[in-house]
Image 1 (cartoon, rainbow, N blue to C red):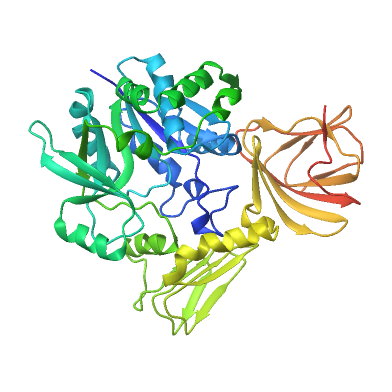
Image 2 (cartoon, helix red, strand yellow; image 1 turned 60 degrees about the horizontal axis):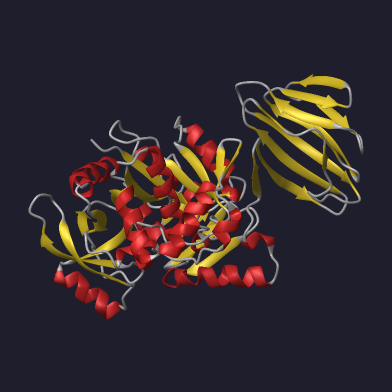
Length: 471
């Protein structure tokens, strides 16, 4: 019996949920609804014994975040494959299919976006298993969402006749995002489903279609896979061959040309959380999330005489209050605030583009920056001093390094720090500190099974991250 190998696509930037989601920490890695991130929820959706370990396709920038988030939920991936650059979904999926085919010639590929919200996890997993026989027989089994409104932000799948040997349907056509009138007609017909981006097929089926429809792309993908290199726990696809690939979506490259498609309808809740309106809709669907006037308050948020608003404070030290607002979304971060009419949430991308054009780092960078060993965030920044909170994961360490233009002071707030300064070793516990002079070789390590957090104070004429020499 063929094994289902989940493939989690994890490369989107999620800018439409700015300022919460940014390029440096996009929405798939955020805890938007529930205790875990969307990426973690996607992995947990296929954690049953019927599925193999997931293969993650992501980028260099997100490799450590993805690996750490899987470790946090106790999941070991089949691999974490790094794309040299974003090329849309088709090349990434073909790389996954080639990689898995080399592992198992009978492998079934389950393609999953990492940023979708599906609260009925088991129901979706059961639907995937119901489609398995169709995929084993050579079909590409897609999963369509039963629409409950005339949505113009999604693509659609037009279903055909019911299959004789499964719970799915044939596929008549794929349709691009419609206008409002067309979406209303699609909803009324009852034969159109939202395109979820999930599908199940044999790897050899996908590769055979690619050989027919996009042979040049497949050849470059195969060359890139063959030239891949191992970097720590990651597999880097070959960059030279990857550069030759034209970006394309899997729908354009294969799906709209294939003739062996099936679609399996899902009637549970599903959202791609594509903007603040979509997130507000899903939050409102959760029990006891709204007040009597339809307001959603997250974090240190309050309202007076407001109606149908989402007010979100992402910082416990920052109290946000809306007074007399209606149909307004307010999102307050430590370094950025968004106030927008709920009907204009599709314009957030324009906001981000404008901020980028004016060189505002808040457009794409979170205050919290992630590294292999953990993360840091700036608390205070002035011309000649900087205060940062630094967090090391258990059993990790920074590199041995020097700084030419700044000195540092570390104060442990929790955990145990192992510090090397030149030839001296220190073991610091809570409230203990150490000074690192300019140009002194130093290293910070956490050798415990619990996290380490400290406050770092930098002083000097230049405080940039590039003032470092790793030894």
